[in-house]
Amino acid sequence: MTVKEMTGVSRRGFIASSLALGAAGLALRGHPALAQVSTEGGRLRARLYADISNLDPAFWTSGSDALVMECIFAFAMQFETGTSEFNALPLALKALNVIDDTHIGFELNEGILYSGEYGEMTAEDAKFSWERIADPAVQSPYAADWAQLDHVEVTGRYSGTIVLKSPFAPLFTTTLPATSGIILPKAAIEAAGGQFSTEPPVTSGPYRIREWQPRTRVVLEKNPDFKLFDVVFDELVLIPIEDPKTAELGFEAGDLDHAQTSISSIPRFAAAAPNGGRFDEFTALNYYWLGMNEANADLTDQKVRRAIQHGIARDAVVEAAYLGAASPAAGIIAPGLAGHRAENTYNYDPDLARSLLAEAGVPDLNVTLSIQQTAEDLAAAQIIQALLADIGVTVQIDQYESGSFWSLGIEADGDQWKSLQLFLFSFTMQPDPSWATAWFTSEQVGVWNWQRFSNEEFDRLNQEASTELDTEKRGAMYIRMQELMEESGDFVFLTFEPIGTLTAAGVMPAMRPDGWPILSRFTKA
Image 1 (cartoon, rainbow, N blue to C red):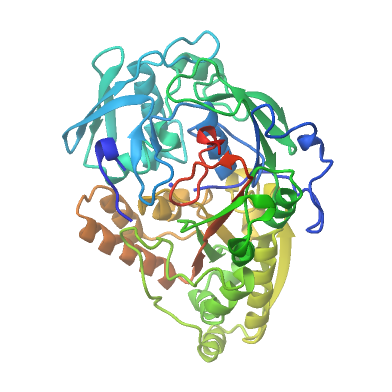
Image 2: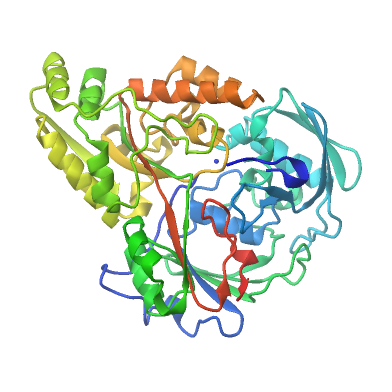
């Protein structure tokens, strides 16, 4: 994949509470979220893989949050849809001017209106919003998106200059085109007490929230004040469905107009999409791995963690989970991005695994493997359970609904992180390698770094790579960082998840190259 610059300028999704709409054999017919809802009257019904939990650009927690945020806020830049390359174009921004490596001039479109009494978007709002995320006092988990920001100079009502401390490679790929580029007014954030969660004090995007029924549906209505592009559907009905198999059945029953499928179903839908609809497959950036909490008393010995690594045949796990629709991965940076790794530094070796356990003085080990309630996670977990039993490790599989799962390793949510041992994890991505590695720094321990992996060389390289503009040098840094992750014993890299989507007849989807839907740009076919 190539990344273009400027007027063709070209990091993750975490899940909070969500709704499993029933057993895999149930469709969605009759669910209250779908009552009297269809594409008739300009309504579009789409799946969220989890309910919303935080819509604040400085504190959002899930891919579902980001999907809704892209509907209710005017992003500074937005990725072009229907292309094979990542090409981000100005949206709320009218123009960008790279003065030099550390000074980027910008101009906003005039007439972008906030809801309520907050008036028009200005350069002062951009200064406040971007400096807010970068401010250490705010403690935003997304501060790395603005890691090199020194300050923003306001030069006019709609114009200013982004002043960086050092060159910053991700600025045009994963900062300005993503949630950290969202511009909100200072008065609205202050009125909300400095931050907000599911009730935004202000909106500025193509849609606004009309209704939210927790764990049931989010209904968005067209914002009449939005003028940056034409919006076709008057209403978006977004339904949290945790299990993709359930979403597939809902689509086949005619109850959804757009849904991401399970990976294991990709071959079936590629052969024939239901109901005259369309199926699309994308090369996603999402990465899937087995993590180990090295702070847990049973896993503090690196030899034990390395034994678990050598006891897992990655190809068998991926085949069981995805039925041939995915291939094993050697890292967390996807093909096409600088730093993609072609080979692992270890391989499946059960004899070596048993030897390492013996050296560690652990003849019998009992561990828990925490997963979400999805068919893919369960299939992967069962293979891992069988493989580790072969080396003398007994695995208990613990399944969680996503709201509970995504609090297991976060220290702010209690002490449950201390008992966390093995877990299956998937992070969504933005098209820059920094978005793969940012979550495994020492600063992220207890936040998104559930492995408690902490390595000085990794932290240093992570910082240096973001300021390196030479792609080859950058790539070498990211490869070394993945080697350090694997050497720790904390990670078993499994796969990059392909994405399949179903879209109803009569609807034209608007998709990024990685399969991310930009719902506000969907049209009628």
